[in-house]
Amino acid sequence: MMKQVSFPLSLLVIIALFQCQTEIQAQVAPSPGPAGPTNITKILEKAGQFTTFIRLMKVTSMSDQINNQLNNSQNGMTVLAPTDNAFSSLKAGTLNSLTDQQKVQLMQFHVIPSYLSMSQFQTVSNPVRTQAGDVSARFPLNVTTSGNQVNVSTGVDDATVDNAIYTDGQLAVYQVDKVLLPLSLFGAPSPAEAPAPLSALPKKKKPSGGPESGDDAPAADSSGAAADAALHGMVACLGAGILFLATFWS
Image 1 (cartoon, rainbow, N blue to C red):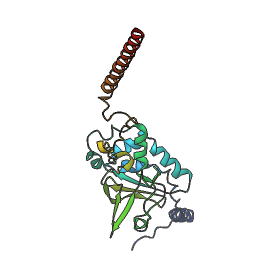
Image 2: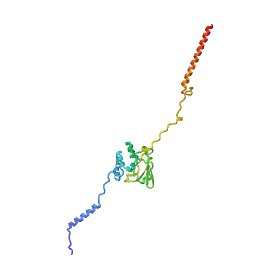
Image 3: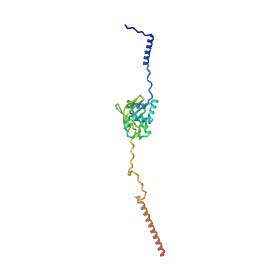
């Protein structure tokens, strides 16, 4: 027969209180703290394969502008991020040929100043405005969809929106397979005007009453003057002869 072990009442009370406190702490666990400020650079770094795009965003200060706008206003934004492979596909020297201002415009062209979910691309109005502005001729961006596939066209090249890297209802970051080249920076220059045909050139006016040929005009004038002088000499000589004869016979 087993011997029954008795515990002091105070010990039982302490054990009960400890278990009760543990259960309360588990049920009333502190909620996670608020997320840190949005940082587009960290989002792209975590996704990987966006090294060149990150470098350009830092050089042009676009990353700071995006972070400040997202963290200090309610205006959403959409970033179309080309991969490193997209930049590698550019013609050699493309980026180096741009001025600092043009690099800023290139980066602004990849940022839409409103939040667009993947489904909202289906109903967006073209041309879509970007941070670069002027959608009519210099920076047009048009969106077309086919099923779930979203394509964007710049007038210079076409790109596909592959997938969403990040979305939180205020910021959407999408991967694109090509660098979006603005028409104003990479469009073909307008062809130079062809020279006017010779027949279309204005003709020189001929002097009224003058000779038909300009080259012969001086010669014609000179010979005419000489003939007039000879005629006058003959008349003068004849007149003098008549006067002499009249004087002699009188």
